[in-house]
Length: 82
Image (cartoon, rainbow, N blue to C red):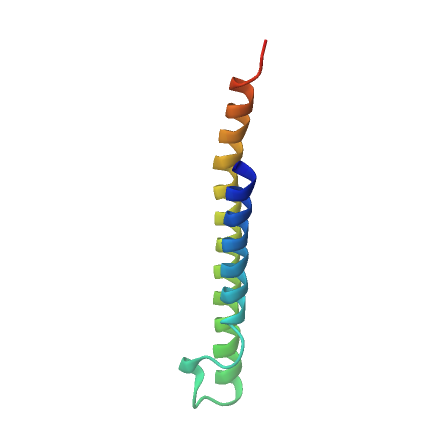
């Protein structure tokens, strides 16, 4: 049962990271009508925001993986015969 819950969590995070990264493609709405250096700066800021968001999702995934992992270790140690 643990394996299926763990895999479901991983799939949900993978979908979220992919959709978050894909949302940063193209020209953002706020950059419409800008030209030259202003457009470049606006696109760079949008890309930086996307990178930060995806990085936070990956960090959250790592933190969420620790909790069930520790629970599984405790469960396995408690069920061990001495």
